[in-house]
Length: 293
Image 1 (tube, one colour):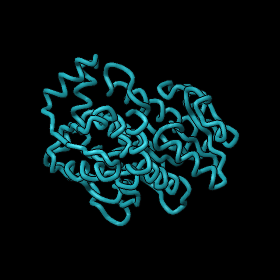
Image 2 (image 1 turned 135 degrees about the horizontal axis):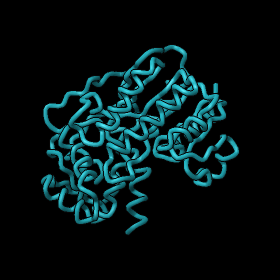
Image 3 (image 1 turned 90 degrees about the vertical axis):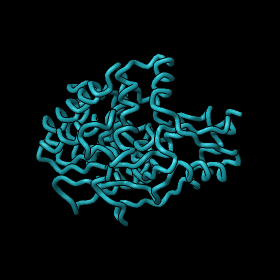
Image 4 (image 1 turned 45 degrees about the vertical axis):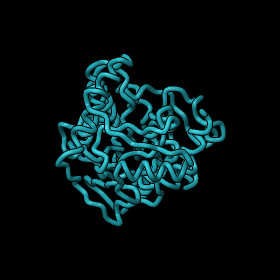
């Protein structure tokens, strides 16, 4: 089986590549700069330099591919939803032009809303576009990544975790490696077809108060969590130079999901993955915080 992997150095993609290699697959790794691949990995993959926003380039890079793990690349412009639209056009061009019959797409909890969830609306757009192609596609509706805590390393070193959610708001938290495991299982399994939605919820839904307690125990640093008003965060992001459309897209991911949102898929044994936030924080976040202290 010929499998292409996008964002192969990302939080999820690097694990997808490693798991495919261990399964005996030589994946095709699509990224801007192949030099970013870890040196031991380069000998085990076919690395192709490509801009994932360039539809013709993506089509050329995926010629002859049977299956594709697609991640919309990080938004880079002033309007994130416009960037998602460009990425969607690229994957559609690749799938249709090359007859790729199987796609596993890294989406998010909240994409089922289709509208009103900030940047997640961009993932919803990719979902609906892939649905219209008539190929076998699985949308991975992932929970909140543990690695998102990396955006607040300085605040965490100071003992503070700032959020725009109510502190008792409960949501699924998941390790990127566990997402990769589900993705690879889907890529390699012959026992599914058509359009599928596979939620990836991690081992537990956690409130932000619980998250702060877990991080305190795992890192040995007292972490206090506080809810920040939307306008305060909006002002902070603008002060940092973020364009208005990016600010609203970022805020929208929280405001669109924090009230009256029910995921399409409830937590079940099928959606529950094993890695706990406590284990991940002890293995990874503890060292990241220590490195900057």
